[in-house]
Picture 1: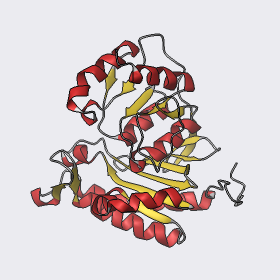
Picture 2: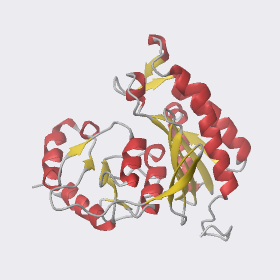
Picture 3: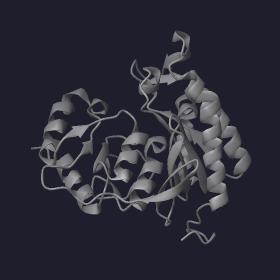
Picture 4: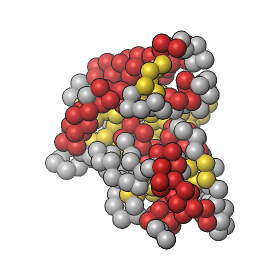
Length: 287
């Protein structure tokens, strides 16, 4: 319930007007900094970070800078951190655990897709209060539509000129028919074949290389779960809230709640608690 409570230990959330302003901040940054560069990047506008497959582009950096400035103006008392800022200054992430309010930004989620001209990328923004996600946004710049959630108020799909539509995750499919997102390339090389074998009995798996669209797919009711071995808050905090508000469940290894400030894994975000726990059992099966 978003009642404005601010007592010690209570999560208040943000009001509808602030949420709407954050959506407009993201839309404006995407229109100005991301879309003009899609399929229009020069070679020197694509760089690498931790490794050759960890890409960053001029669009990532410019969009994060624009969103950061606007978010600080809107929420001057909040800590604002983005993926690219943490890449440059890793100690920033440690500040999140003690922050009363934190805005977390992934300026271009699915950078590899974006840099390759594949239209499966998005902007992710979340607001975390006292360690809990209270606002989440999964924005598709290409189609200018989004899924948004305020804690306790459901998950909603919106687009300009269209009435918001409440989303619910789908009922559990029959045995062996679950649809899952398992980013096998994020696991250690020696673990990849065993990981795929563990999940095979549940049903087919795939990876979009974009958490934004994976969580949108689950919230729309077209898939059942996603697994992340070492979750980062910019990839998962918004999606965890949105899927939960649509009827799903987030858990770390089936035994602990998801806390965005921590990178313990595997994080499992699923269409229901039962699905999440079944996936967790498969993830822990070393046989």
